[in-house]
Amino acid sequence: MIEISGLFRKVDDKVLVKDVSITIPDGMIFGIIGPSGSGKTTLMRMIDLLDNPTRGTIVINGTIATRDKKQQLELRRKMGMVFQKPIVLSTTVFENVSYGLRFRGVKGEELKSRVLEAIDLVGLSGYDERYAPTLSGGEMQRVAIARSMVTRPEVLLLDEPTANLDPASTEKIEELIRAINSRFGTTIIISTHDLDQGQRIAQRIAVVIGGMVTQAGTPEEVFHKPLNSEIAMFVGVENTIGGTVTKSEQGLATISVQGKEVEAVSTEEIGGRVFFSIHPDDITLHSGIRVEKNTTTARNCIVGTVSGITQSGPFVLVTLDCGFPLKVIVTRRSVEDLGILPGKEMQACFKASAVHVMKS
Amino acid sequence: MNDIIEGFTQAIQLIVTLNPEVMEIALRTLMISLTATLLASLVAIPLGWWIHFHEFSGKRAVITIIQTLYAVPTVLVGLFVFLLISSSGPLGMLGLLFTPAGMIIAQMLLIIPMMIGLTITAFSGVDRTVVDTITSLGATGYQSMITIIKEVRFAVFAAIILGFGRAISEVGAAMMIGGNIRGYTRVLTTSIALETSMGNLPLSIALGLILLAIALVITLMLNIVQQRSRA
Image (cartoon, rainbow over all chains, first blue to last red; front, top):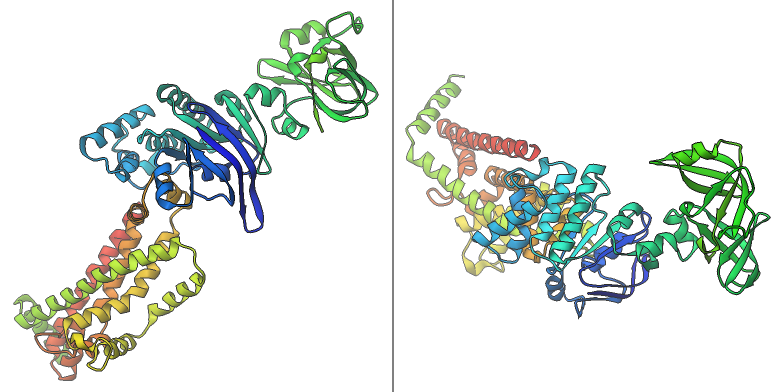
């Protein structure tokens, strides 16, 4: 288990990481997501003890990391780290993968069998005598993973491992990360600015913005129930809208936005300025006869004009101008059945429980 | 003109017939300069690594001083070592003046700054992530240094070859510290200087040709190293 508390790093006058406290249980794939320059790499480097924190503590499997070089080396040898830039040393794949073992004094047959096993693990069997710098970016990154895994680390740190790779290589690396985690129970900490990747791989996620962990939770919590508007905007939650609470009773708040009223399950007080989000999946579109509020389970039915229709994979993203833009995901079939066309007036309905209210 | 042609003819004869005096001077020269280069490498490469990878106040000034010393006149190094090892100097009791060991020390001091400088240049070509990767793999400080040297082995080898080239071709310090004693401290450069002044052109030319041949070998090695590093 890795327990980080009050971690702070300042270089010159610049605060890179500010009061970060997170706990990463054994065997978990833990995602650190955040925009570029938010402090993810600094945090990863401190966990691998490559950089010292200005203050705060890192406890790795019960041992508090100090500045003692010998202790740092001992702790670092329980971990492996793969960097964003695919780095291989100017020698063969075999030699590259063998470094960690050689540093630990492993020799002979044991070294050979473990190196070949690690090369096999990353799907590069037969590449052992290839000159590593001639490999593709994706292959180099797999060599880097093999090089870290050959020492059987308890913790594997992956700092934006697919940032420079094509989609096919990214998919292979992601499969590999899942396989390593399930086969060896390795705790994996992966930083990424790719939100989809964070959602696909991580079991828990910490959102780092401006050097601080602004939210930590399951991908469901982070992507569907962001704590504030900043996180919502970063994680790309559609339909993040600002308004003022005009009524609040029995756990139901009415929020006024651009002259329209939206009911939400919330205990926010009257007069409070809030943001709310509605997932485009949770909204249904209706045309023709107006759906009366309270005649469906949806407490909210808002009229708007279709202002945009965009293909989104197998679905269609319809933008409705309701005084504020509201995005709705529908099937292609629905577009035809409902006759959705630009300029057409339609009604968007959604439940009060689908409205996620957050602090502004 | 005839003297020169005759000098060349006799010089080639001296080389082809493996003239004992010529061979003895050439071998001693190689022995002294190779030893000086080897010992200088053991000092310069770790020092270059340390200077490059550690932050300390005055680092820039130290590098500037090292770069300035690239061009230090060999006679100045000779004078410095002479003052150091002459009978009245602080190391006078070691009796190193007019010995091959004294010459080795002088050549070491001459080439160490250049080798440190070139080693620093070699290390500055190493991507920071390479260093981090090696550290994250659990390398100790020593293991990290050896791995990084291996990574820039061609550039470091070029520094060693250039150091050897400067050591073997210098004359000032060799003359002042070695004293050009026949059969003991006489080397190619000091011998050429002496024989030319004595009018013994065939021997001077023969020794000069050997020195040129060594320079040619050094250049070829450097070219091979540079080609391999680009490959």
